[in-house]
Amino acid sequence: MTELTPVMTASEIEHFLDTQFSEVHVDGRVFSVIDVSPAKTTLRLDPIARHLRPGGTVSGPTLFALADVCAYLVILAHIGPMKHTVTTNLNINFMHKPKPGPLNCVSTLLKLGKRLAVVNCDILDENKTIVAQATATYSIPSK
Image (spheres, rainbow, N blue to C red):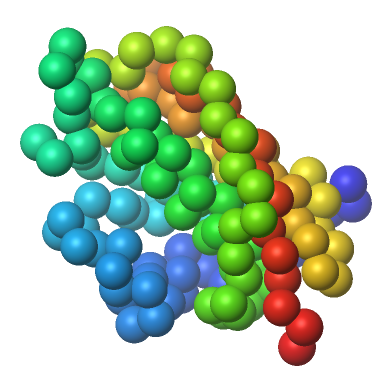
């Protein structure tokens, strides 16, 4: 894919989340935008007790949400704050049991078209081990 230049910064994305998608903070501020770069966005999750499951791990639904939010944000970082961009498909592979603690999701645009975007998401633990991998497709509304 050709090099893409972000049109939103990390702080602009954080502001968008605060004002247009505040429900992402229902558990408190657990997501933080770490980096926005060409075709990539990194989102950090600081899980709380609600995100954990018996056996000392972060729950699957929490990992799914992390991938979904990060995929959404990498698209917005490159098309602007189009809040009606929606997930049409997300497939996730759980690869390693993550210990309770911070996780980073690195989402990379594989395709950014006028109506569809395809994103790869790697979720990494503090040791940079990929604990889950997801592929997401989003529908982009017409301007």
